[in-house]
Image: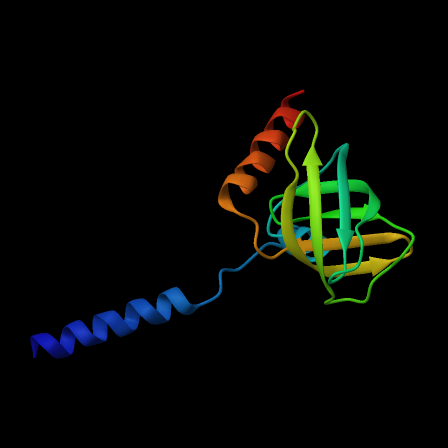
Length: 135
């Protein structure tokens, strides 16, 4: 009998946890407008990218965040295209090299999601954004 009651308790807990959390209309509107997992900040930094083994092209950076960046370019790429990205944040001497995928491609703007950003590089972005946010 003890095993049966524990099993029922576990099932009840699971059912309670599996139910979606209700969101207010305001939260739903905000989430619909921005599907990013991490915020992005407008910033000045250097960025270049290439598809496969093509030569690197320079883009005009627009925003950066832990999950990706956006840039202006003259050559748009199709959605889901994987690219090599290198960027250097202000006051940094090192280029961060990462693979990314095109998630947005419209007009002259590319939105890229990082695929293999190393933790120490992610922390550089977090620190960089914190200094920009406080200034």
